[in-house]
Every structure is written in structure tokens, then in C-alpha cells.
Image 1: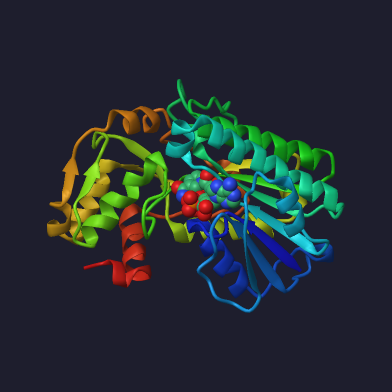
Image 2: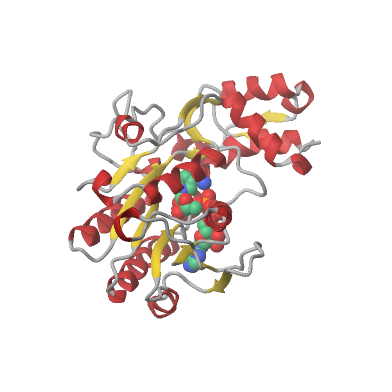
Length: 325
Ligand SMILES: NC(=O)c1ccc[n+]([C@@H]2O[C@H](COP(=O)([O-])OP(=O)(O)OC[C@H]3O[C@@H](n4cnc5c(N)ncnc54)[C@H](O)[C@@H]3O)[C@@H](O)[C@H]2O)c1
């Protein structure tokens, strides 16, 4: 079985690629039989940093339908579609966001349709599909009303995934991922990046900015939990998903003050490196996002989130010992 990971050189892309390569296989065979993964192709504007004889890293543009068609092979049983222009960048560059997030998703779905093999497509959506005047707790029945270009693109893509599934072109699944924190490495263009950098940078001895009010609450999941839940989303049989191919993943409601408190408990010196200075542009985007969810459907389907933010930080330190001073 061949797997394609778009955006495979990115943060979640590298992590899901490594997890898939380490797995004994996926239950995508006849009647849910476990099938080994013979090869994984990553497709991204940059190369994957992973090294594995089964890995083929292809550099290209997701919005170029001809290039995408070449990486969806007759034996491609799974496409993990992660390539995207993320929230801050999509808000700043409208044309780029449309081209990559809408054009790229269409290119992926059209290539899968043309393959004629009904591959599974797992799409990384986002809680940014929710915005504006929301109930205190967002449920599976809450109407997504995105208030950003990024959230709008994600909602449109979810509907594409649903309709291509309805037409029998793919076996689609969309999962709305909470803000992933603590994210290692360097920030991408996500407006939510401070939720990670205000922990990551101080732990490395570097100053970080908190650009929103400390009372700001975000819906967060750790990298470990997100990768575990992406693999679970892939492994669930189509019947378990039923007609509705989109769901909200479990997460934690964490205020930035709670993040500061956890950081302080780990290292008071690190906590002293957080500089509070509101950035109106970031605050304007982030404060429209939903902060509390009831993820009953995901939980009933066996998706497991994190338990508490202190454990999230402990896992970050364990997984990234060289990034901590
Ligand atoms: N990390 C989060 O907090 C979070 C939360 C919700 C949803 N998501 C979604 O998960 C996915 C992965 O996120 P991530 O955090 O790994 O982000 P990331 O920025 O690290 O990865 C996205 C990847 O897409 C690639 N890409 C951008 N334009 C491209 C193009 N034209 N052609 C091919 N590749 C292109 C980038 O090079 C990058 O490697 C994205 O779709 C994102 O919207 C992430």
C-alpha cells in the first residue's frame, strides 16, 4: 500500500509520516485487514527531513493539478492532506490562500477521483471554521461560521471532502484539529503560534511575546494527541464514520494565564522571559475562535485527547530535550 502525505515536510506532516512508517500497517485492506505500508510519498514545497528507504520526498506545488496527479498512484490507498497556507498567512495574502487552500484541495480531490480507486483522504481541518457569535460550548451540531479566510477555506474543503465521498470518488474524513501546542521548532504563519512560542522559547532561554490578553482561552491539543487522533481517524472503518465525514477533535480549553502558570511551575526563570504586549492583528483573529467544545461524537468514536496542560508541557520537554535549557 502507498500513502501520500501532502504538506509532508511541515510540522504535522513529518510527524504523521514518521508515525505511519513506524506502524505495522493500516486496517485499509479487505474487511479491515491490516495492510503494510510499502511506501510513503511526501509532497511539499520543500523536502522532508526524514530518512527512510520507503520514503519518497517530492517537491512541488499543491495547486498544480498535473504535479499532484503524478503523486496519486494506482496503489495509493491513503492521502493525508495537510498542505496549506495557515491562518496568519492566509489572512495576509488572500490570493495565496485561495490558490493553495482551495485550489490545492481541489487538485488533490480531482487526482483521487481520476485514480478511480476510491482512496481514503484524511483532511486536516481546523477549529477556525467556528467564529463570531458562538454558543459558550461548541457541539457537533454547531453551525460553522468562519470569521477568517483560513477558516472559510477549511469549511469549503470539508464540504468538498463530504461531496466527493457522497459521489463515491473517495472515502473522505475531515478532522477539525485544535491549536497544536506545544509545537517544536520555529513558528509557521499561524496566528495561534504564540500558544506554543510562549512556552517553547522561554524554556530554551529566549524571550517570547504574549500578544493577547492572558484571559484569552484557546482550544489546544498536544502534538502527541493530534498524531494519535489522526491515526485513529484513518483506522476507523468507513461505517463508523457514517454519512457525516467531519468532526471536532477533543482538546483542552486553556487560558494563556494557565499556560503562564504551568510554565512558572516548571521554571520561574523561563516564565520571567514572557513579555506581555498585545498585537491587535493577532488578537483580532484569535479572539473570534471557539474556546470550549463538547466533542461527544469524537469521544464515542474512541478519539482520545490530552488530560491537562501540565502533561502537555511535560511531554514537550520529554520529546524535545535538546530544545530545553
Ligand atoms: N498545527 C496546528 O495548530 C493546526 C491546527 C489545525 C489545523 N492544522 C492544519 O494541519 C495541517 C498541517 O499543519 P502544520 O501545523 O503542520 O503546518 P505547517 O505549516 O508546518 O505545514 C503545512 C505544509 O504545507 C506546505 N505547503 C504550503 N503551501 C504549499 C504548496 N503550494 N504546495 C505544497 N505544499 C505547500 C508547507 O510548506 C508546509 O510544510 C494544515 O492544513 C493546517 O491548516 C494545523
